[in-house]
Amino acid sequence: MSRFLALLMLCLASITAAPAATVAYRFDPVHSQLLFFADHMGFSTSIGRFTRWQGEFSYDPDNAAANRVDVSIDMASLEMGDATWNRTMLGAKWFAAEEFPQARFVSQRFEVIDDNRAIIHGQLTLRGHSGEVALAVRINRQGIHPYTLKDTAGFSATATLSRSAFGLDALPGTLADAVELRIEVEGQRLNPVNRRPRKR
Image 1 (cartoon, rainbow, N blue to C red):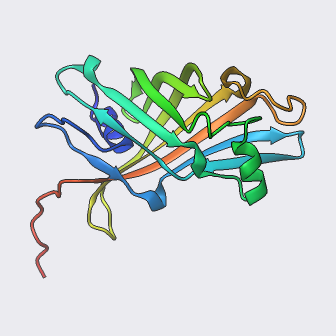
Image 2 (tube, one colour; image 1 turned 90 degrees about the vertical axis):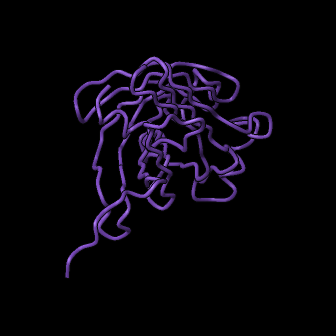
């Protein structure tokens, strides 16, 4: 297990029942985004985002098989840029948020590509349907933030899924079946790093 993967996973969520060696990060909500993109009849790309999502990660440096990511998304936090369109997308024809108020991604396997890249294989449950999704992840930067002076780690993740595979099969000729996911995250370390004060 590389240092990159440990930092990456720790950014995804707060940690429960953490071992002594574990470092915990929390989301910086200003700089963390979950967005999706789909072609709209070739005229434009429809863009949406979810503003409320949370989860947990368990990391054991001595047992890679014990590593876990579990992220839940509040479907009611959907934002499409228009109140009427939001209600339509949350209705029974699309996300059916009243019946299925949460989507959930649970990791199953971590595939390390190199020190800066990895693939997270897992199961996404959305609208009552479950299917495999592979997140391609890139580490961006880890270190002391120059403004907050907090230990910060950031990464980007992308994936493409079929909306019809998750029961979102309305208007097949209007909205493309392929939906791109993009996740941007900055995490701040929960326990402060002991650093010597600068000499003036």
